[in-house]
Image (cartoon, rainbow, N blue to C red; front, side, top):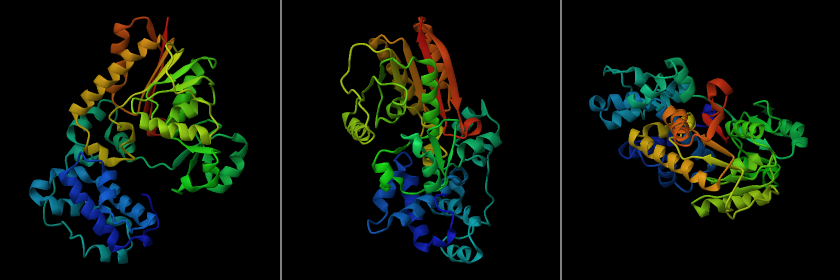
Length: 376
């Protein structure tokens, strides 16, 4: 949950959350953040928005059973049932208040399928079953973690831990995790560039790059986005170029680089020693943080992502790299190992020197895949 002190919840939070969920039911492929933004009143404060989002996200963690029983219950009652499932967190007094809004659903026998029990659509459940049992699947889709940051100045580690009640994680000197959900973007240290918000998974993956790719190498971050991976790599490399087909996203990268005192290149050259591809994907490694995405992804979309991933690998060859670093935030083989293996079949000069799937179960971090290919 975003907020563990239940005394702050009010009837209004539930009413707004219920409205959001009913809207989303009819448009499950629409980004949840957009629905929340358009539904929550502008006058609602940041804490109230956080509480509404908390109710929405925790309700979605019971969504598949509601979907399975929608024909029997109807849309309205299905949403109410899903919301009723998180009442157990509340005090009896708060429970008594909420029960006036959300009626008990105890007269209709519910169907709970194996997929519904772990809150996954059947086609996704089948994918997870290839590697994990039901208990492990629950651990993947419901993992709870704090906020991860990367220190740009390791010397402040002790003061940082005291100030934010953080702990060092991942065996990396610059990686720390906060237990709470403080608004870090407004903190003076953040604004001065002393630390950056970055997932532990990304930090571990970029550390793997530094282990296998010589530090004098020139690197092209070909799907740079807001520049997070490049900022992390700048601990190890000096010659880094950022590119993204969406030039607007690079504006944020330029701002972050300036704040953190980094000198990046933004003009493409003909050749690089290494190309980093943080490819678009299903985002299944982040389902625990964004549970609504579980119900927006389709098999067709995954196939579309596979095509994009393949095209990016092919494009990377144009820069004649010695190393290709392929990453996704997906847990699915068809976006990870299978894509890499198919690429190597057609480009036998590249050999796999490292691949790894990071998960909440193995590394206590978001799901993240990395493969490092070397040209021989």
